[in-house]
Image (cartoon, rainbow, N blue to C red):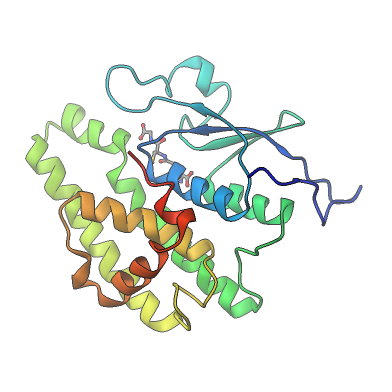
Length: 227
Ligand SMILES: N[C@@H](CCC(=O)N[C@@H](CS)C(=O)NCC(=O)O)C(=O)O
C-alpha cells in the first residue's frame, strides 16, 4: 500500500520532505479528510492516535500543543521534523509530494471552484460542530445538550443548503467538480457524514446527495470513515 514518496517536483529550490507520521483521530471528520487523501495517494504512514473527546482527551495538553500549536487534529510530521497543520494545507502538500492522482483540477477556474467548496466546509460549516465549540456552549454559555444540538444542526443545515447551491454552479461531472475525486470531495463527504450523524437526510440536498453516493462507492471514502 505504501508507495514511494519520492517527490516528482522536488528540487533544491523546491524541497518536499516525506511524511514521517500522522496525528489522527478515528472519530474526527477533519482527520477523515486526510485519511481519504492519503488513501487516494496510496500512502500509509505511521499514525499516532490523539484523543480529543471526553475526560481522556489529550489534545490540549502540553505534549500535543508542542506538536500542533492549535491543539487540533489532524497534523502531520515530515521526515525533517516539520509539522504541518490544517487539512487543506496538508492535502495540497500531499498533492505536491505525490502528484498522481492529482487532487486539484487542471484548469485554474476549476481549481478555484474546488478550493471554494473545500473552504466553505472548512471555514463556514465544520468549526460550528467541533468539540471545543460544543463544550464552550454547554459549560461556559450554559446551553443544555438539546440547545447545543439545535445550534449545531442550524449551522449544518445552513451550510449544506449553501453547498448544494455551490455544487449546482461548479459541478461538471460525477463528483463535486468533475469526474475525478479531489479536494472538494475530500471536504464534502466527511461533512455530509456529520450531517447524517446529526439526523439529517441528505435527500433534501439532491446534488450533494448524488455526489456523496458516488463518492461512497470509492474505497478511499468508504474504508476510511470515522468510527
Ligand atoms: N480547520 C482545521 C480543523 C481541525 C479541527 O477542528 N479538528 C477537530 C476534530 S474534527 C479537533 O481537533 N477538535 C478538537 C476540539 O475541538 O477541541 C483543519 O482543517 O485541520
